[in-house]
Length: 328
Ligand code: PEP
Ligand code: MG
Image 1 (cartoon, helix red, strand yellow):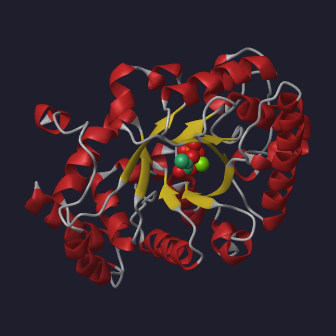
Image 2 (image 1 turned 45 degrees about the horizontal axis):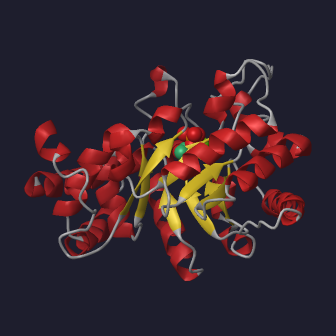
C-alpha cells in the first residue's frame, strides 16, 4: 500500500470529477524544507513558529528569526507559506517562559500572550516581513482568536511592522508586499463572529484540534477522555459546515490545518462541505493525495446531506468509510 500511495505523491491533487485540492504541509522543523518533501506539497499551510522557539534556550533574536523564516520562504518559491504568530501556552510550553496557571488551556496562550507583549509580537512580524523581501509567498495567521478586538489589534501591529520594515528597506531601494493576514478558527466564540471578522482578515484556517477540544470541553491530550474527543461529533461537524458556508458567503479562502485534514475520512467529509485546502503533517500527504485522486465531490455531497442528519458520529463515519472502501 505504501509503495502504491507513494508513487502518486508528486502528482497534483485533483478529484475524479476535476476539483483541484490544495495539499499543504504543517511545518515547524527545518527538516520540513528538505528534498523530497518540497515537491509533494503545494506549499505550507501552517508553519508553527513556536517549534523553533521551543528548541532555543531563550527568545531567538529578530535576526535569528529572520534567517530562519527566510530559509523557509526560499524553499517554497512561488508556493504559499503561511506563518502563524507565536502560539505558546496550553499544550505548547516554552521552557524559558514558565506559565503557572490552574487552567492553562483556558489561560494565557496564543494571541492573548503576544498581545500582552507587543514588543515580542512586533519583532516576530518584522522578522517575517524582512524575510519576505526576496520572496512573494508569505501570509501570516493569528492563533487562538476569541474576539474581534484581537484581530483588530493584530492588524494594527502588522500595519506598524510593515511601515517600519518598508521604511528601512526603502532606504536601500527595496520593498516588500503587504502580506495577507488570516485568523485561525479554533475557539468556539470565533464561529459566531465570522461576519464581523470578515472585514479584518483575508482568510481563515480551521484548527480542528483545538476547535474539537473546546467545543466538547475535552483535553486533546488526556488519554482518559480520548474516546470523548471526537472530531466527527455532530456538534463539530455542524460547526465545520457552518464555517465552510460562511467562508463561501464572505468569499474568504478557508483551509483546515488540524489533524482532521490528515485523516482520509475527515478529508472526504470536509471536501463534501466545500473545503478545498488542507494542511497536514508530512506523513499524511501520500495517503491524502491517494484518496483525493480517487474521490468525486459530486458523489460525496449526497453522503454529507445524509451525514448531517445523523445524531452520532459512528453513523456519519460509516457512510463515509463505506465510500472510502469503495474507492480504494
Ligand atoms: C489546531 O488546533 O487544530 C491547530 C492546527 O493548531 P495546533 O495543533 O498547533 O494547536
Ligand atoms: Mg490550535
